[in-house]
Image 1 (cartoon, rainbow, N blue to C red):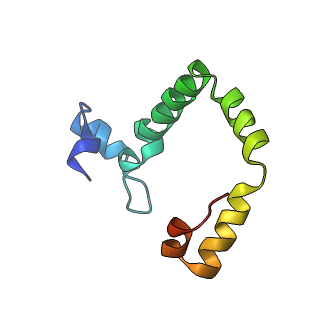
Image 2 (cartoon, rainbow, N blue to C red; image 1 turned 120 degrees about the vertical axis):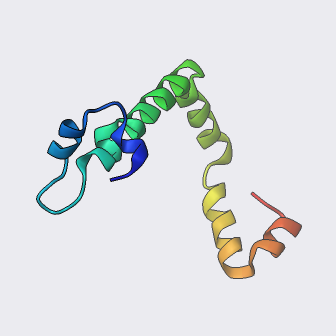
Length: 87
């Protein structure tokens, strides 16, 4: 069991988190809530910055530029991409 996942639970609470497979549920990011909390915070920040409008704007301006750029990267490599014309 990882030390940081043990948190402030009692040893008995930690014991109940050991699953039949030998893993500790307390080690799981889903149980700890770290990833869901980060996702929630990111979603809040994106909403506050009106990112959806910004992303829609970029789509209209850049159209399929990312596909063209990826094609150049795949065929010519990163140095040629950086030195040449980018869409």
